[in-house]
Image 1: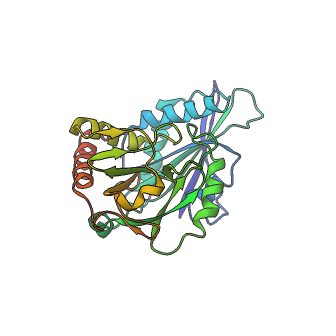
Image 2: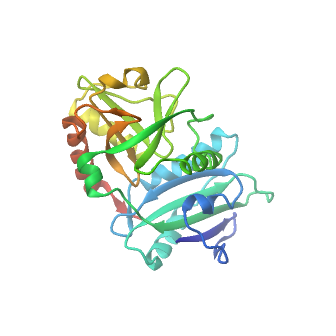
Image 3: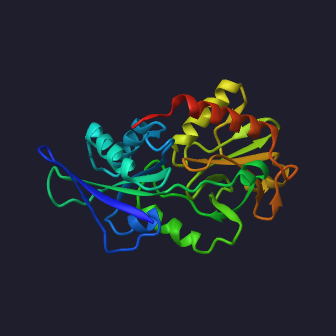
Amino acid sequence: MVSAYCITQTQDEFSLKKVFDSIDLRSLDQATRLIPDGVYTTFRTYDKLNVLDLEGHFDRLEESARLTQKEISLQRLEIRRVLRKLLKNFPAEEARVRISVPLTSAIPKTIEIYVFLENLVVPSSQDYQNGVRVITSRMQRKNPAAKTTSFIHTADEIRQNIPKGVNEVIMVDDNGRMLEGLSSNFFAIKGGVVFTDDTHVLAGITRKHVLEIIHEMGIPLQMEGFQYADLQILDEAFITSASRGVLPVCQIDDQIIGQGKVGQITKKIMERYQEKIKRIVEPI
């Protein structure tokens, strides 16, 4: 179940109201489809009132708007205050939170900021121990640097046809490069080198911290998408997102990856990521 709220921000006003009370909202994507197109960001909580890099999420909202030729300036301290209030009253132990800002306001200098909260669901411990299965689709974002809600509609249509047991769909472009997932970033490992596309994907917040870990560990890194045609020689793979963290991939389409189990480099990155999260999550 999703709780939905709308903040109205002007120069002189900052108000909050509950919205869509009469609708049985089952997912963040369903809630997002009820509002005009705009920009959004999604994150999870830790110990209810802590998050990872909330300023980074605010930055991404404003930058995504600029990339679509719009300018927004969020009252960040006020939004933090509202988030604390909403999360304190949210019944689940942990939440998945989406902030969406439509870019079609007819009222000058008025910004509507929608906040959606749902119960956080993360992969099982078995998924982290054994890896998950993903499939691919020939597609890519039109404006990959901007996190716009229009892509949610496309992704939702694809998800409706995902076979049971598949965790994610990885986008492959016309040049055969493996880019990113519908709601994740993709990393491939071959010969001790990590490959991940840099110019044709949405740069996720979790991805940023994983790239920092890879640099700290001294692992060679190629900022380019791994070629789908070379899938059979791939040693390891994993995906990253706010809800998943670092999640190993053991199968892509019909191809078993490596030995069909979590690889050593992926394990080390997973461990470092968990250690880092404990250190850097901060109160909202």
